Image (cartoon, rainbow, N blue to C red; front, side):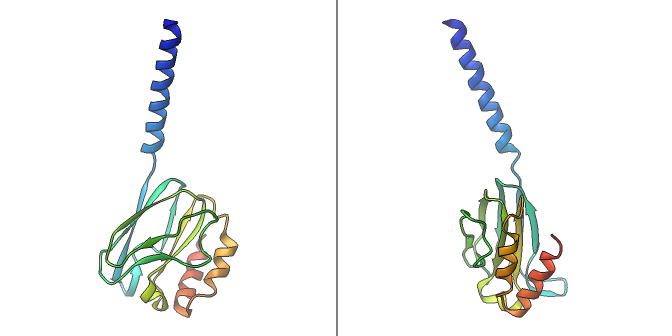
Length: 149
């Protein structure tokens, strides 16, 4: 009986240690919402981000007047939409692999878009098709981002 309890305690300790390692390995990537970066105006600081499922995306309201929301059709199946309100920071743990398109609602026409790739970009074709429906400057910027995949 004592051996069974000891084995159960060891298994529990091992499971706890493994769970700690798994959560400790998750990364955080940050995108800032900016009025200007270099010669570009109304941009996300990192327009293309690659992370793994379970990693966290932090969106920082560095400059005011921006938000970050999912672009229709540019979200993996089963994924929660991204919705960071105006002038607020947000953190989202992305668990579904695929391509996530993000836009700033008032500045999408000025090309304020970003692309986040989580693991395998399984919905790449659907996301690229959705990008074709964006305003011209955002569509051009997305095309450039997709060419880097």
